[in-house]
Amino acid sequence: MKLRIIYIVLLVALIQPLLLHSQDLAQVKTVLKKQVLAKAAWAMQQQPETVTAHRASRSAGGIHDFYSEGDYWWPNPASADSPYIQKDGQTNPDNFVAHRLAMIRFSQVVGALASAYRISPEKKYVKQVLAHCRAWFADTATLMKPSLLYAQAIKGRVTGRGIGIIDAIQLMEVVQGVSVVEQDAAMDQQVLAATKKWFTDFLQWLTTHPYGRDEMNAANNHGTCWVMQVAVFAKFTGNEELMQFCRNRYKTVLLPNQMAAEGSFPKELARTKPYGYSLFNLDAMTTICQVLSSKTDNLWNYQTADGRSIKKGIAFLYPFIANKDKWPYKQDVMYWDNWPVAQPALVFGAIEFKNSNWFKTWQRLDHAPETEEVIRNLPVRNPLIWIDVRR
Image (tube, rainbow, N blue to C red; front, side, top):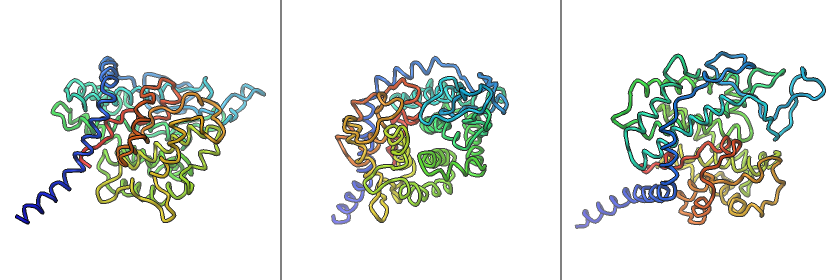
């Protein structure tokens, strides 16, 4: 009898976390179901569009190379032929962004389809995901090269920069979406293999090229986003060594060097868009915790010797998400009125720490922002595909 009781207790202890996460997933589904299915209906009508559909006349690369231009760089009024000059925080609307928009669209399509699959696992969603992945990663006529040599170029100055790597955060929901549907019987194994090979090659470039190393060592949100990308792509390709590297970097570099004792991010607060950048960095750090946490190494509960933790980071920003009027720092020079939206940090944190206030605030915020700048800085727009009921 005693052995039976012990067995039952142990069984409940093992099953309870799974049940809790299943309940959390059900709650998120309830909030998002109508929006997800509507977006998936849109995604089912979209034809693949890769970088090869948009020629970039100022790019030093070829038609298969991703190209973008530095957002805050403008023509010099003194001379049209002079190198561009910087206006930090002020986006130049005439810069080339077609490849970035194509990548965002790709992310939106796959994210919507995978989210709908989580609600109703239909093969039509898998087949549409495959069509887009085939175009981006397998078809030699339309694929993108697995590198970002020409991202965030500056006219008259550089043909590309390491900080351009941040543009590829849009591929995270592509990878996560494929992970959601890859076990379905409709999955094309050749396309799946080509997709994983593409990201294996991209990881090699991200971790060895000087641009990648520079971005890894960035002291602000760029360094956070390097870890976030590498973590997501490493998990997708089964690269445990890189996943562990990212866990260690979060613990020993990102958290202690970027977060202040009270939970703020001083390097983001010093920028011309302190509110938006603080949200962005928090979202990126919580995504790292969401992707890399395990039963044996839970980053959500990790804290430095002096008490810095992701929970403290969410708690610091939460009052200013719930009521932006309380923000005690300077306002952003652009897009101040467009934030906050349904920040993933809130829903991930609410689920992990069982905080109903964070969840309710996330629930009432905008889940379908249309402002390009907001979408670009909100790489996790489909939380349904990130909630892992198995953990």
